[in-house]
Image 1 (spheres, protein in one colour):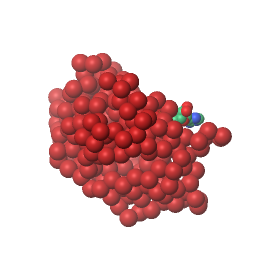
Image 2 (image 1 turned 135 degrees about the vertical axis):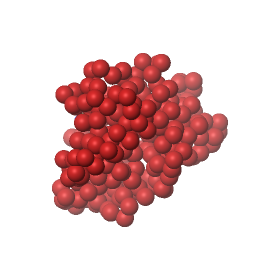
Image 3 (image 1 turned 180 degrees about the vertical axis):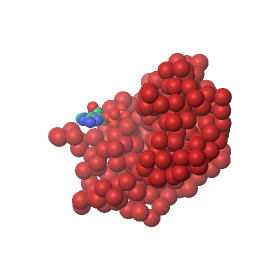
Image 4 (image 1 turned 60 degrees about the vertical axis):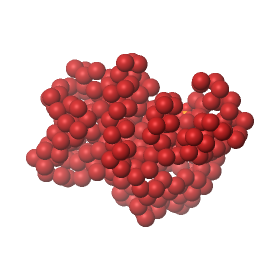
Length: 244
Ligand code: ADP
């Protein structure tokens, strides 16, 4: 479904991703954990080509982009349509209602007819529990509600994979649960997901595989039980001790 081979990303002299290999099979949930600055967000942004990798390959559904060569804008657009991104700070358009935010991608990028997009957008907002907030603007919604609009928007392009970049870390604690609940439901429905998060309970309950990153590399990977109860690497142990 999603595969990453030997992915590197450098900002000037700073090596942020130093040879990442990753396979995400259909319907699986991969949770990425690691200390601040270890490259988690950059990895997600490279998967969606919001950042251009320095070298390496990203494939989604048999479409492969090799960043050791020049990659065309068209291929980047095609890949982006298959990967929905949910951002830490929601990134909703402030002058658009919840429904307008959700249909923006399908209507302007995918050229879906507006009435069809609206019908589907309503269903998606109902799915994330916001069927009664279609015409609300972001500033009229709580952080948790805005993030659920963000999830509905990411789903609106029918992505093969959903990418979550610390989706709950900007939220007040009492609003975290409602967003995690929606994410858990999506996982149960078989959505393929890559989730960067500090929510270890979510990782324990929902992840098929947990990846621990440090210094731009994957230091350790395994099932939640393996990683949380029998970490093999010292750095993983140190990190888990610090956050527990
Ligand atoms: P994490 O998500 O694990 O906290 P990030 O991927 O955000 O890590 O950042 C990894 C490193 O890359 C950090 O040192 C950060 O300062 C650097 N970095 C991220 N984005 C940029 C950028 N656009 N320009 C320069 N450095 C960046």
